[in-house]
Image 1 (spheres, rainbow, N blue to C red):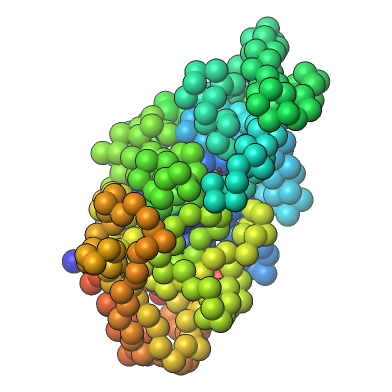
Image 2 (cartoon, helix red, strand yellow; image 1 turned 180 degrees about the vertical axis):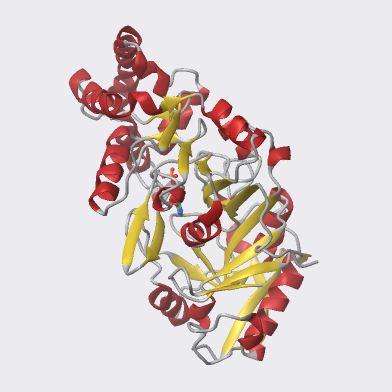
Length: 433
Ligand code: IMP
């Protein structure tokens, strides 16, 4: 059954179904036009959402995309890890571009803060392991901050609000983290001053924005407000269900909403999975449909596939229906938002991976039985390209037949209807089905 995204529902969740960079920023911005509140539930400034409108480009890392709509409140949930300096910088950048942030941005008191030591530990850990084991992190301190959270020694936003707690917590954290830097990684230690400085600046600016975010969101839901929940990264980077250990350190999938915001998933009326018309990945780890040839180069160039956060070139490959089916199942997707269709405009033929072959067996579902991803052979079907620009098309009926057939085939293979097609970066380059 087709689910029209024109039908408003009170609570929507938008998340990525591949390895991130699916173009969620644009979709959240677009579907968030009526949202009273937009909330983030996981990740940190490792994410990068690019939104383009009225000739302006906005790159957001931590702040929910709703900040670009003047009447929308934004919440950074407890499941997010917040880098104080990065948030201050992002706010300053937005203000320079004419966006008012004060009184509209709220941070959960339980959100953990990324301390000055965390990126040092992240980078030292990466540098210390041999090439095959490197995750290829963004170096932003995400993993070490979540590790400290789980080890119950993290620094939370609310710790800033009491001067004594702030200092004693900072000293405690510093002691343990300096021990790791010094003894484990043979790196210089971090001083208390450099740990405290960004925290104090952050407190001075945001103390009044640190709130009981769960209560705020629950009362928004109870009073019938429109809430949009925004995921970062993608399902295959989920710390539990992704290509572990080549994942990020949070739950990117829909389950993360409950723990990352403190509201039940039962409140969510619609779950939208954002999926690119092909596949990309940054960092290391399994990627069965990766193209290391000219076609991969072509996708990278045509799609502008360079990281919004680190500028790293993204690995590119064909659409992998095994991945999308799996993501549809673990996220319980209602509908797909298919992005970057226009990147495929010039191709004579397009390939779609329908299943895998591994050690003589066929797998149509993502499976933990695959131990050596290098040995997986993607099995493709080939469909004709449409060989025409889609950029100015606004109605599904106006798409060339080959493009409609491509969409239909992806829907069939994914087992989820496509509710939106993006044919260009701007807000209006969109077809809502
Ligand atoms: P971390 O999140 O910095 O620890 O990096 C872990 C893995 O997740 C690396 O492969 C990163 O490239 C990847 N990653 C983290 N954030 C993003 C994102 O926003 N888009 C795509 N990949 C990401």
